[in-house]
Length: 215
Ligand code: DX5
Ligand code: ZN
Image 1 (cartoon, rainbow, N blue to C red):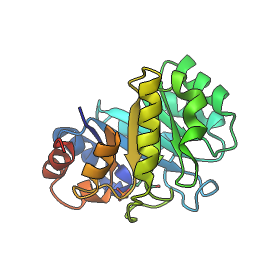
Image 2 (spheres, protein in one colour):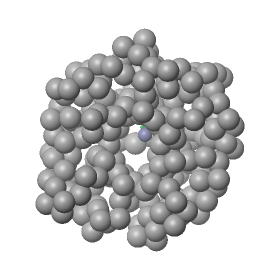
Image 3 (spheres, helix red, strand yellow):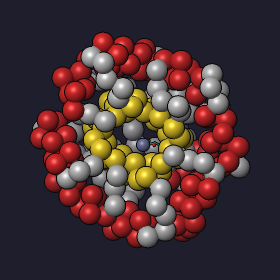
């Protein structure tokens, strides 16, 4: 089953609540919330207070993607604000294992994200503890960039290792996902598709359905 997580980075921030409601109505499985600190990536987006306000508007699963240098420090804030899944970068300054353990000890799902230059093998030691692996298919920081096709090899490597270990870990992809690139990532083994521009530029329901179509 393919799950779709529209990225609110591409939404109208003056109408965030309505955008969340319309994503749920369009059949989205979760809502992807991109948090950037202007340090880990060269862009600043939003923080826990906005997640908290948005939580009042919809019950949809909040899939929070932390592109910040110190995820460990801010995880309790995002969890109290209503995050359901927290994904942080293995390239961040926080200790990877401690950060995963913190998220799990607070009762939420944990994901590790890999930037395009980080090899698949970097996440292998943590697979047993993880709910999700996020393979970035663009350099994190901005929406609307072009899909990096060579990342499909990394998706396939992570999927193969999960299968070898008997794990049904979610593999998420993020960056440049459209109805043209989706078949490539699904074929490689991804099952959770993040899409910003593609979902928000037109009819959300049509876009979500096209991403979910079995390839
Ligand atoms: C990029 C973000 C993505 C972004 C995706 O750093 O993590 O979630 O919003 O946007 P599109 O789908 O437009 O590439
Ligand atoms: Zn993201």
